[in-house]
Image (cartoon, rainbow, N blue to C red):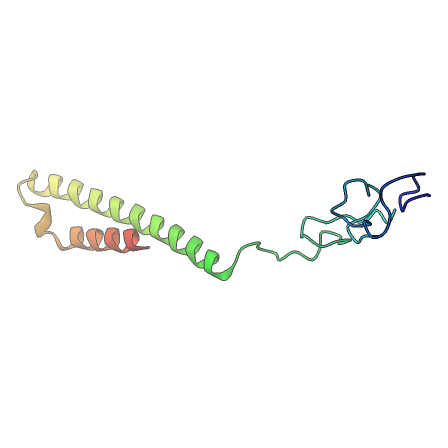
Amino acid sequence: VIDACGVCGGACVAPFVTLDNALCWCLGCDGVPFSHAEVDICGICGGHNTTCAQFPFTAEQGIGIALSISGNFLISVSLNLQKYVHNQNEEASGGQQSYVEIPLWWVGMLLMVLGETG
């Protein structure tokens, strides 16, 4: 008896002609012997790697990515703003004025808090 893969006495015979049967090496992903169909990078049997989404993540993941990038941006701006205030305070008063009395320093702190919540 010749099996589905053309092997005399082979084990790829009905009802065992399935993709799960390792002895059915000749089956494509479509279950057809010698079809040479393979699963593409998009997970489509017989596909041509063209049916994938442009961005392989969900909307929720996209929101998370946007929040993390914007949060890091706000933190960077806040640190630079606070450093700027410290430098200006040092030049203007020799560091005699407390930086917490300077409104622009509080803007930097607010941006820091907003960035950390993102």
